[in-house]
Image (cartoon, rainbow over all chains, first blue to last red; front, side, top):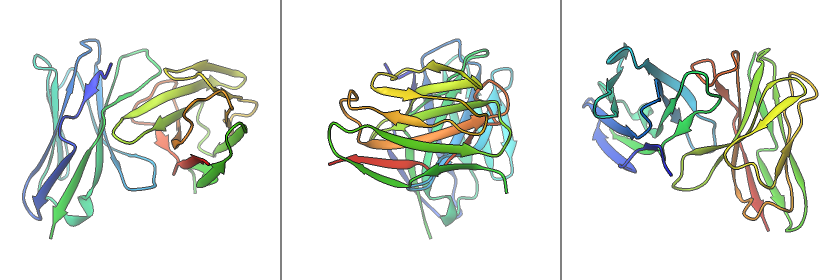
Length: 112
Length: 114
């Protein structure tokens, strides 16, 4: 049973525009959320995170929004760059747990 | 340069054989993890270890075994009991005993059963 869902397997965006990647979760006990970026044949690298006590966290071109009532989070990339083309994984965890639950990923393609 | 090293990058195994994937970290992290990635699926936890000489099963531990004899090393053995071993395997570590921003991933090992 997938507790973290990324319903869009792929997304294409023009360079300079905004990329919005979405993620939904079902477990209301999750209180920490992360986004990872992954290039082919490489391990994921941490991008940005947000705690459930916040509804927004910003780091440069990347902003994560959390809507707890909807159990939904999104990653905004502005402006999008060709180097952002990768697979983005949403992940969630519960305080005290030893596991991160990952979504299935969204492949972002930024078109020059 | 600190990091996590997985080897080999590609591995081929005949059916019925055991194979061991290596994971070494020089980050002085306490916790280490093994994940498996299959096409169209997220990463799934196989085993984790919070401290030397201790490890716990994750969500899909059947057919796998691990050891944690040294802080730096957390090898994963894919046994012949694993029914569908072909996958991309990722090792990770974290400073704290939680998977959070301190988690770093290795480059992965792609295992193919032939």
